[in-house]
Length: 246
Image 1 (cartoon, helix red, strand yellow):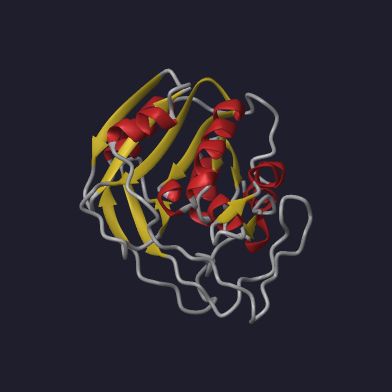
Image 2 (image 1 turned 60 degrees about the vertical axis):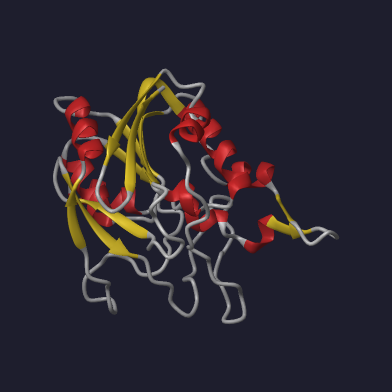
């Protein structure tokens, strides 16, 4: 299994801040909490092997290891970090910013239709710039198989703008470890989806992981209107967990 895990690790497109590998600098402490959404997700996948699962949050080596040990094929792509690429943003004369959605989808989530059985989204939609969110979920619909699952988290109205952005590690079928993301002085060199070197120099703008918005239930239902079903779970930490079926 070790060789499988190593080969899958090479699929990482990038990782924000520190990797979750011990002995490589200071790693923020993790908090553990129960996740009803993850519990339902795990229950629906239990007993099935050979599934194709995509984790699009900040990369977690422990997620890769756990899911491959369960017999699944796992891909990891840090879509949140990719969405913060300054070259995707163009200031307009009126002071607003336009986003190159087409290029974003060309360089990210570039998989064949109906490739995946499940996608782990975590709460990245809340931290992405809004123009990227709907196109991202549209692409996820495309790359999911019919009946495929999406696990996504959304902050509630009580969450403040300083809510931390976490790297989510699956501890077991019902529990998550939450590791706050920290940004080093430069984002490390990582190969992008198109083979570009995304090394950030000390003068480059660092990713901004502030909470961008709060989606209410109606907004969430609208985001997934092309999907078959949604199931909501109210979690701790002012987070709403949603399990969505393609």
